[in-house]
Amino acid sequence: MTIAPPPLAPPLGLLAELTHRCPLACPYCSNPLDLERRSAELDTATWLRVFDEAAALGVLQLHLSGGEPASRPDLVALVGGAAKAGLYTNLITSGIGLDRARLDGLAAAGLDHVQLSVQHVREDEADRIAGYRGAHAKKRAFARELAAAGLPLTINAVIHRANIDAVEALVAEAVTLGARRIEVAHAQYYGWGLKNRAALMPTAAQAAAARASVERLREELRGAIVIDYVAADHFGRFPKPCMSGWGRRSLNVNPAGRVLPCHAAETIPGLSFWNVQDRSLKEIWEQSPAFNAFRGTDWMREPCASCARKDIDFGGCRCQALALTGDAANTDPVCVYSPARARVAAAVEEAQGGAADLAYRRYQPAPAA
Ligand code: SF4
Ligand code: FES
Image (cartoon, rainbow, N blue to C red):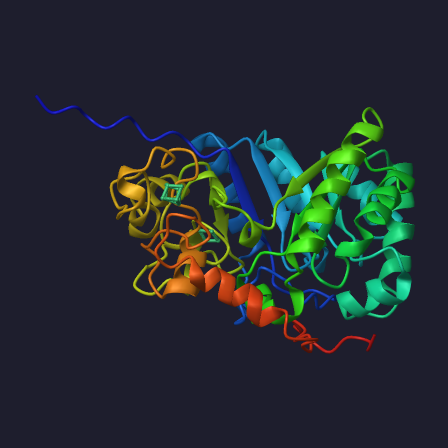
């Protein structure tokens, strides 16, 4: 008797990359090196249909991201449509380009939550990392407006060699800005982050100190702020369960409508990505060859195939496996059981050689920092 596979559960979250346009130029951006042009972006009606289809499919949370989602003039209409569809809406923003009137419009349209990126606590360093003079002052002003508009705030602090020693100050800044939560997340090495890996990778000692600071502050600030922490997996024994498993919990729709299992999926050769302009989100979720390529555990090779952790970390990250071993179906080499583990050590070693220049992610010319 053959046992039927369990039915496919619906996705919980949808990341809508509304645009790749952005005033900032962060060198760890997860967007692809080849950014989508404005002329390729989905129109308002198509996004609204996607949000309706997402809600019907079972998606609960919609993350409106980019680039900078405020670059879309129709942002209020998009939030209104998503809220009407019954989705919890989370705006992931640099805080640049959203004045009080627009914020009030977003709140009235039903926006539930805002995540604001912060690069450092020192203005000069924050602006240098963001590649935009005056960015940090604008972010502080934005956080004040947000509080006045009554919208809850999470601070996103991506940490790397240039700001990792300021983790404690970043948490203090988040409290000052009125955030209820801060996500302290080590830079991930995809897209622009991979291009800048040599400049971004901290030392093992810095990563350990950051973790210790977070653990201590979680105790000290209990009740004042929640601190989430995304570890630097290059210094761990096991990889992260990237995306909570490929094609298992969430999907990304890029500005041109291609539906991706993760940010960096388009780096994997041989996968083809279906587009919301041609097919329904349900059809894509259930039948797209790209979503089914690494879904579940049947695709795994050894050592993952017979490992007790395969339903815990899902073999790690496909895109990291590709970047470090040349084959996305290999075990993520961060894993101590991976035969290619030495490549992680080599990447760390290579990054300790000295200061590398940052390659900024420029969509369009911005004021020099
Ligand atoms: Fe995870 Fe694969 Fe390593 Fe096992 S062998 S811990 S499943 S990455
Ligand atoms: Fe693509 Fe991890 S970023 S699977």
